[in-house]
Image (cartoon, rainbow, N blue to C red; front, side):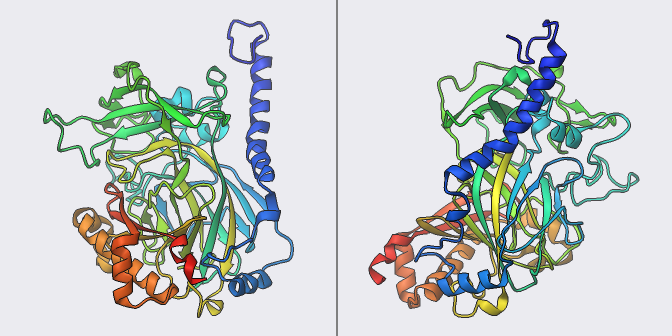
Length: 483
């Protein structure tokens, strides 16, 4: 029977409309069902003894919040996204109270690498990736210039690439506060094309900004994109490659030729590529859906490139920032202005070739505001960097420059790309973990140094985002004997 996937069916249009309506209902329901199955609101706010949020702080934050939690929904479309940048001046797309739940849809900026699989039939994605000879659905893409007399590649100049949904305004949030972001759920966005029902897709670009690019065995300079398939029903926990292709010069609808992957959202004309479907056969890659870019608006500049991470979060690219994780961010501007994007189906530490499996996701978040006045004497006192907590671990994030916007001066957004190193990021992660252990576990410096060498894992988060990252992981059960 045709389910909107047989163009020869006499009732194709009717069946296709029915399929799209069913799919929309499915998108609204699939996160809700898994959320309820996990215990829903009954499980929220149940901070364990090892949480960074002490019982007293949890009580103080709860007392400040309204009595009734609300659940908001923020779709991803041309009206709700900003492409390639953070800004303290952006108009909020939704306002929430502390403790509220927000379902946020996110789109990968690589969707046009395979429009058939990642854009077609999806109204939200179609509105964002619309690009004709006359206009773009989202014109500005990046923190760069928007004057046609100045830019060469396109508005925003691609100085920042991620499609960011938001921002979310948290009522009562002020500089000096800490925003706790609980990721309650995170799942792939189902493909809307009836030809690929039950599937989702993502793109991995081994690109010119990748760590590998100048170190190929044959000395060649090439960008290769691999399209991966993910099961959107949740019955399979792995991704598998569909095909790959070498990037060839692409002419965008405005007539600009892109010799390399240098501007986000350029529609790939596959009549100009050679697709290889015989790739990574038999390889099943475990998926770990997460958000590569999640964070707040910085105060230091009006428009901030979304690529380099910074002290209020952003493009951290840690695969652990997924379902069940909690992030803590220092608030820099009124309302906090949380934005979410750069969704990934999977990624390894380092993100070596330049990208992960860039795959559209939908997440469910609970946002809890901790006021500055309530922080003294708690583990969150003085927090000035993005901190990750899971059920079993604490993670600090070190960067080549902890706050590059402040440290590198007026040219920071260009200078950062030439100044980063793993050495600097490692030093920052060491200093943050030392401080964390001394402040929260009341260790001496000598105790902290010894423990870091034998009980803390340092890993390279990413070496491709301008401001390189190293994370430090300590397991909570190390301190079980201190209870």
